[in-house]
Length: 214
Image 1 (cartoon, one colour):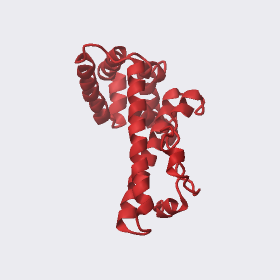
Image 2 (cartoon, rainbow, N blue to C red):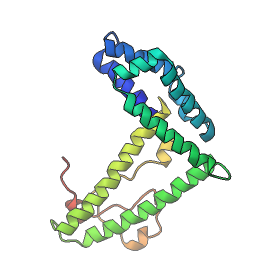
Image 3 (tube, one colour):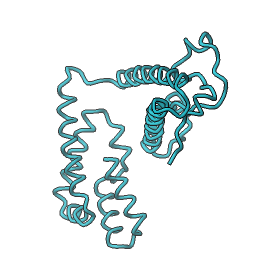
């Protein structure tokens, strides 16, 4: 749903609210999200699935909305949302008990810890790889992928908060891993038990392996 809302908002901004496409996007956005997207995404899982289903019915049964979405070429995206919502409903009904927020948060923390230790192992291999070698390039590229994904997740969470300060307490707790800084690597005894959320600084040699950004 976020992709559809973003697309409609971008159309309004790009074409202007008084253009035919801008007017169509405004109509669709007001009819589909009369109270904004935040109301939908913060619902409990089962209620969220039902609300998205109702929204899709409006997109289909409201002739003006259907025409507007067709004009904007959003038909495929709406069909994609419908297919994903169907799978989402099957998944949450397939559980004996719906996952709680605490379940989701615990799983996220566990995943972040595993990811952090994986990054530490990659960084250790990168430390020993010859500068400029093919192995060093592969390892540096693997780290870059994780850092870029973390940045994308951070942007997504900021958008979901819909105006909440991006540096609030939860955001600070879940902040993505920062890019290595060119500071000396401390002895292993100082960081072997470090918190996963604060990986040890990389040495200048590791920094030298970093690939140029395009």
